[in-house]
Image 1 (cartoon, helix red, strand yellow):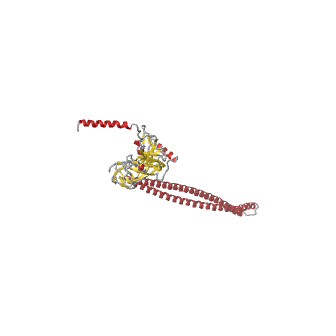
Image 2 (image 1 turned 180 degrees about the vertical axis):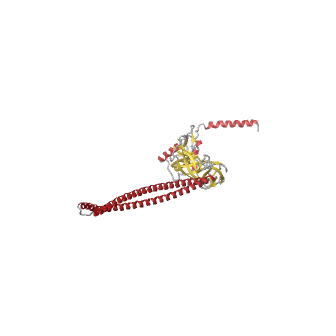
Image 3 (image 1 turned 90 degrees about the horizontal axis):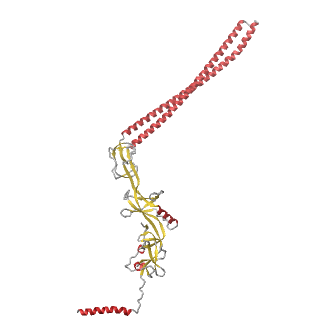
Length: 480
């Protein structure tokens, strides 16, 4: 084909292009159809709300092994890193000095008991002396009574003799009786008066015997009191000696350093031959019980107040599983066993404005180790009327505020500003901005502007190549 023919073809094409618009200028093109968008109708549904809280694992029980007596370590009887049982002997401290103290205490107890026996014998002897003194006093009183009776008889016998002697004296003056009769009567009277004096002396002697016997009784009573006091002192001595023996035995037992709890023992801080002191600040070893572990996580007080308000106004309700806790490990794997929320601390840390939540997790395989970083998934409650919107339906304005486009009753796209609470799998939990029954545009957002008429179709009826959103499943997790 020659160059002239090419030029003619190009000119003809240009002329045709110019002519066609001119020919159609008198006709108006029809408006384009409204863009098709896929919408999802908002529905309320109950959703459990959870929050992930970072925390650290600590042992359920921790026992730092410290000696309670001083001495040289003779033996270490455990292997580092193994499980031990309560009562297992871990270390042996040289017991020689403590055994000697125990023997001395046993001798002191024996001596105190012997002293007690002697004191009891002294009490028995003092009581026997008292009985003898009482018998002597009773005999003296009986003798006194007999002498009083003899004195009374002597005085009674002297009365007629006095009268007879006086009468014979008067008759002698009249020569009515002989001198011999008067002398006989006078001699009999003197003899009776001598008997009275002898009886009086016997009474005095008997009274002295009674006084001496009473004094002997008082001495015997004093001896009894002294002996009984010695018995009490001996009993106290036995108690003191036995207390010393118990202390010596306790200290001797402390030479065997035993495990106070079941658990896994760590490395030993000392070796055989080391000198240790009672209650030293540095532990010999540490035992940690790991069949159960604690997870302590901080929680902001603002979150607590927000949760309490939601529970109070009915936006959240509590379910039976709210104390059940899941655990996410450092490698983002989920720990297979659930734990239990045990307690909430009653004190707020003033420096951080947070308090501590403590959970307990079973740890039969010792997967969880003290100091490990984990994330606890704690159930806050159930939102009975949750509205969930797919994340792809939410966009942001220039200020970063979340918004969504809905289709109103007239089929026109409208803007709704949203308040988002948290993510629930691949959806947002909306706290403000949407209502039940709203048709939210999920697909076709790039073809729509606010105020444009659109043709809404259900999300399930969208084209096969359109991305669909699965229904939310699983608990809601608070957004970071």
